[in-house]
Amino acid sequence: MSDKETIEVYKQLGKKYCKNIELLYIAELYKFMKLLPKNGEVLDVGCAGGRDTEEFIKNGFQVTGIDLVDEFLEGAKKFASEGRFIKMDVENLQFPSNYFDGIYAAAVLLHVAKNKIPAILAIFHRILKADGILFIGVKEGYGEKRVADDTLAGGLSRFYSFFSKEELTQLLKQAGFDIIFSRNVPDEAGRSEVHWIRIIARKQT
Image (cartoon, rainbow, N blue to C red; front, side, top):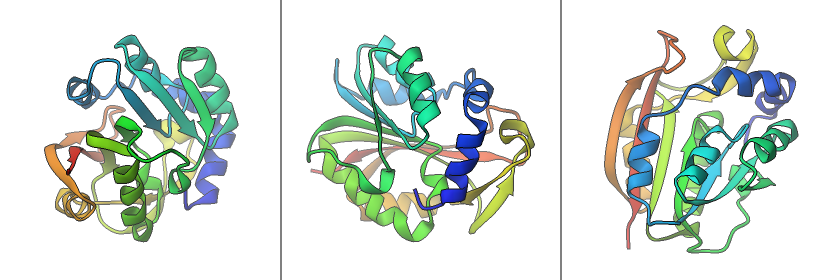
């Protein structure tokens, strides 16, 4: 992840952040799961406390969760004990090619500088199996900036890259993905200034 200060914010928030998001389930997660093979291998990028990891496990998937915050990983191991959890950066994923049936990256790439996104999408493409499914969730907007958040981050600021749906769609197509589903949705935490882009794509073969 490109912004070390943002990682430090998450380390500072620790369990409090996981508590703040524990009930914010993403409806599109279930659409993503329906596209995966039974008992498939899923990578949960930026797994935090394991909220979504546990949902995948309950639905029969084999899940690897990665994050850079030790306290998040410790909590995830307790909350989603059947998952495999590794401290790893999305910019340097150490997995074999053609390994995962699905990659779930909700609210992760929004903390990465835009000029690094194509390289990350290329890694996603490499480690997905043929016809593998990718889920991405980012905030809608333009440019890059630090933003303070009173609702989930106690007023602390984090680095964000903002996207339009057309911009993210083009990046995915250039990386070798076909778009299956895309939607602009309001924020599950009720922040009126926040709007999300959710895209599900399939690796081209």
